[in-house]
Image (cartoon, rainbow, N blue to C red; front, side, top):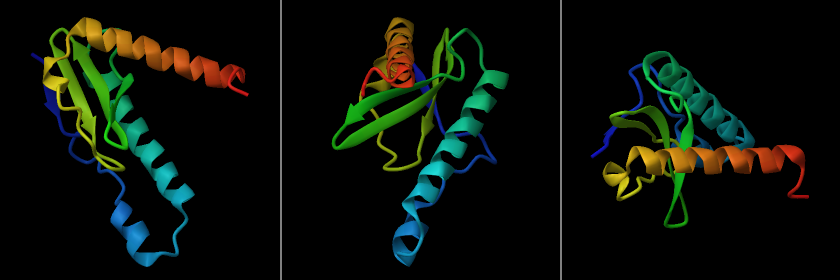
Length: 121
């Protein structure tokens, strides 16, 4: 059984509510803040985790969005939940094995390569 943690102290997700209440702020700015937040969590996981997959992001479709996690380690499976955006949680995350996570990491890497190469155009 895997373990899921909150983001490390001092790394806070951006507040979407502030963007929605004011109505004047640009959502691109919010998405940039989300990317920065994810990057800080990934850096922390690379520095404090273990194994080849530490710091990688894995995502799972949930409802009308996705649940996102940063890998801290695979032995044992330890993930950091990314609570930005909708903050969805994958309902079976604690049941995921190291093999499941490795497969998801490979899928994420392949998808990133596809978009980098422009093959999706």
